[in-house]
Image 1 (cartoon, rainbow, N blue to C red):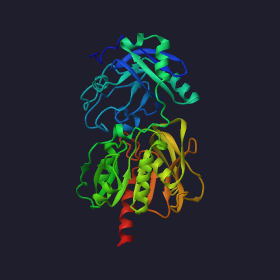
Image 2: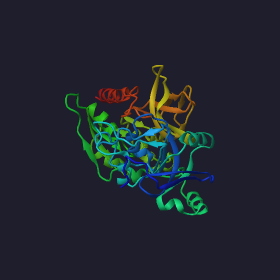
Image 3: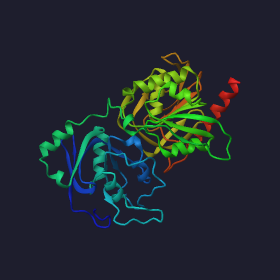
Image 4: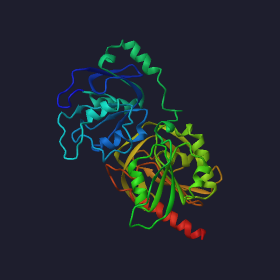
Length: 387
């Protein structure tokens, strides 16, 4: 194992599908890794980023120049492992300095087999991605860095694109896991959470609102959901292209048909959009970071929010429209102020809503955490209406 306190001399190179090459130094595990190269703008929270299942299939570039200062700890992880396909940083910290640290970031990357690269001009690469859009790429490190350049480029160009990929099965649990409602809060009942890449902070926030949280495999059926007698259904964040998740859309339509209260975040927002009858599309370079301004049209507040998405819902920003699939009136509830992307949906004739960003945002900001309260209130009001 390479000591985190001395920079490695092992070579590495980042290769893009357009043929551009960026040499650097090996970081984390050695070898070859492929994925869609994206950039994340968070200045803090690299541990939450790395363990967010939504990043499966992606090589993540951190725009913050100095990464690894506070090490890694078991308390802050968002899932059972690091999910990024690869990791790009400029200056990895040579010293870990935090009383909560249990291992260095370099050690964690090696343990989970994550191939990384350091010493890269991340600002220059970010500018390329902002201009050209997210691209397929690969990191070749250690002995793999010596592979012929033409062969490296061939490997990159033969890698699958993110469009059309369904990655839910790779990150989801294989059997249901139950987290009981927190003590001292009104008990609301069983909540069916479809795990498309759920984060632990989401489970904690839902349990804190009085739900017994049943995290269910992404292959769950409507009968599986009915079997737990749920008071509501939740779709989590997750990786991949929403256009490749027809089964999850069909399941959600069955949920809407039964008028069960529904809340979705991130990938769940895109799938609600599809279930209502809207399309989705791929953003040029996506939204990834913890500093994205979003307008809540219901309150008029501008919130600073955490994002991780490369796809978005194609729906009219202004006014109320009829659901193309017959679910009544729908409105866009939240809008991204950087580029007017749909950041939330609300069904007016069904107890269903969603947002494109992460209200749990374990690394912050916490401006949108109230949405969990809004969901709990929706469930309570629906129960009253049905009694």
